[in-house]
Image (cartoon, rainbow, N blue to C red):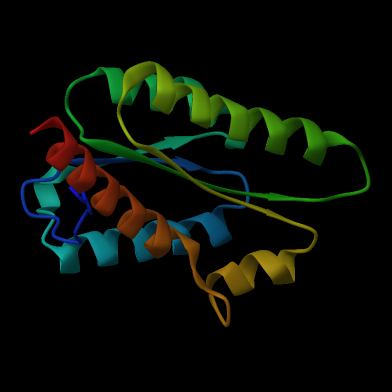
Length: 155
């Protein structure tokens, strides 16, 4: 049996991060967690490219451009969509998720969905460095492992 598993070595990996400015306090914490983990895994500072966009809805088109550029091995998509009193949440969260998934499938580049979708600001804060960990850091680990497993599969 042949088993392919990724590892968590970021050496030689180039990461793109697309971050939504809406709910920036939460998102900046996600970005900091992702960058910290990437650096500790061995991703070089000059191999991390950060792009800020207005909100989560804009993430997929920018992620597609970055993934298609040839400059990165994976793209982390970070944002926070917090449910409010209108159906805005349902449209934005769903479109961001499906758009991010499509970019990865269309380009063959790992595109990691690190957009928080929560009912409250407190839940978002808990997932951005609070008691629920930092989902930006988790996204960075997922990106590194996925790049490494794809490299193994592609020989």
